[in-house]
Length: 448
Image 1 (cartoon, rainbow, N blue to C red):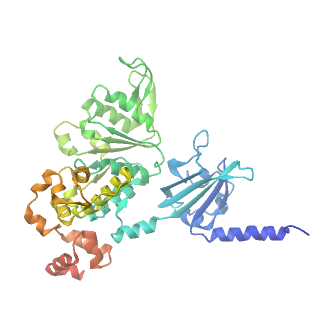
Image 2 (image 1 turned 90 degrees about the vertical axis):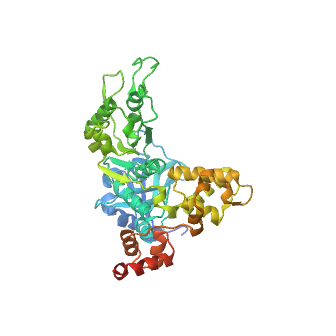
Image 3 (image 1 turned 135 degrees about the horizontal axis):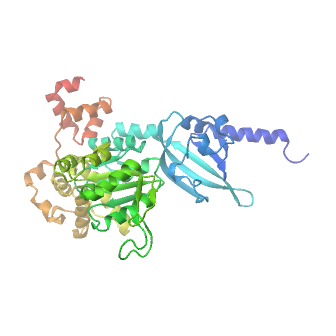
């Protein structure tokens, strides 16, 4: 008898299932109607859902919503899926816990090369990322560079607020990366695959800002030759980032407040009331409480926006991140121009670290680019730096980069590293000898 027997075929299928069940990756497969027909053991462990409860069901119904969040290709009227797509996202488990996973989604084809379903392979990164953060080994998070204690706290706040749709307000000086943090919150959330629409409220002309935010209908004003969608409508299912929100006029603040309260708006010149499902993240470099007291910002709008405040540290308060950022900008220039960028000499780097950086990370990037152009050799020297860095006191340059240690930051670093002083010193951005001297002067910390 030629060919495989029925028992052999059944045995091969069982063996394949055993192999897939022993993988450290979760595997979910569904057809174009989103009906799940495969769900392995690791998928059960990561999501908390059992295969008996999901097989044969619409994945959105079975898993409490799209596993891919806003990146789902099966939420619209037609399927929009590339051959293979990979990304990092957050999923919500059956118990309501948020887990960070690395997801790869691929189109499945039959013997005739016709698409018939989708295979999603995902790996849980949550514990690994948390261990790296606690050990001080995390140097970047969602395109944000930093390993200073204050930046690690920002990373954790981003992960925490990403789980919810509450409004977030970012406060930080110009150039501290408020838009990067807003984008990170968006990308880490379930809205991550949806649109991220930034709006610079201070850059839009007063007579056009309402149209930009809410859109207008044809004939609403001179030059309105067609209907136009506003930023809130364009951001449907995603996030609107209102940068420099303190620059909005009191009249526009009233209209924004209404949208935040009711989720509705009207286009300029229109009579129809529209809705938009968006998350609001706002930012400013001004103290909104002082703006409220001065009568320039509505108190009720302040409380609507400032539900979850996040303060971004200026670069001068995380100086140990400067060499890391310099390397990042050098690599960025190398990739952009296709040729190796020069290194920074020890003296040049010392000047970079000693400088106060009033323009923060944005100014630092500009300084790196200036130095690359100015440098004629393989190493950036102090003479290649921008003029303002030349006024750094020579004495501070000779001493090299220093960082003032505080009881709270040292205690936190020691807790995170389980008392490992070498790792704690790396987190704090100081040498081990500096930390040891500090602990000698503060014996109560060493004994904790």
